[in-house]
Length: 468
Image (tube, rainbow, N blue to C red):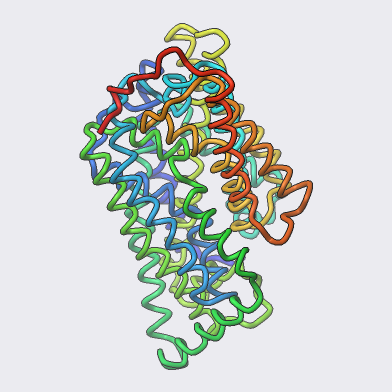
């Protein structure tokens, strides 16, 4: 990938600002501050942080690739994602914010189901966050390899390792500060790219629209109805209150601020998905048919933007990757300490703080190794989505809304839901195109209600502290 001196200056300037923010936010004196930043985030910071995390490579490079391949199809299918974010802001995030004694979803689960369910929640959270970190690291490492031609594994290590060091030094406070800066960067440069593409397009908007609908129709013709339903359900439930998002709700200053932050993020995501999807459609006017879909985003920038501005676009892509990785690494470290280690033997505050920092580096190291085997962006995300919803969503809803539950209903829901989804997808290869997420959610519900029958609690939890 040939880049000019101006582009290199733009990228270098981005990293200088990032290092400065890391230095300014490096101090955190306790595990609570490392995990939740003092539970003082206002609505606008939650909005910027959530948006920066959500708009990862999947919803930028990956979504542009889908626009290039299938027109508007994925935009309509994935509107379930911002809808879920808005509903989460209205009904779920405020309930989490009121749990001031909780740092993780595992803590929330422990209130209703006990330590076993908390431990399982921690295992699932850490495992999935390693997967998310690996996918982001692979994308960033591949870009660095294209620029430098250094060995791929080294590039994976440099991208993920530098993000881990930033998170290691500052915890959630550093993550939030850098995400606000990164959000500002890509929310300016990407719309500029789309506008330039529209302005320089050699064909009219009506012809572009016709191309988009042809691609959309072709995508519909080659995808079964059940597979389409699976995509909608996966994007609705797949990232619902993932640990990085749940942590933003738990770190919010007020319930109202938490709700406002999530709702604004959902509205922003609708606009963003439209922009990058349109960019994929517009690419047919500029790029040859031999281009790899995952490279469309970068190739459009290279062809349309002048030197310096293209460097800022590359910096924005790096920002998108780093912001997603930061959130995943911080949340994974917190879940490891609070839900896994503390379930076995609670450490002291000082030891928990040290473990949180060290586990950030450990999770990053595992993710660097896994990145070598990660699939394409959207495919990888859909696999992770199909495991999150069947394991966590049902018992989490039970905990937040005070459903009558027993310790058995928590862990049995997780085991049956996750086990069924895993077998359905990997062992049985989704029979009749029925998506694993639907089968897993059904099994999770069955496990929850079976658990209530197996051992009824002598006293149903009151859940007064999380009532609306």
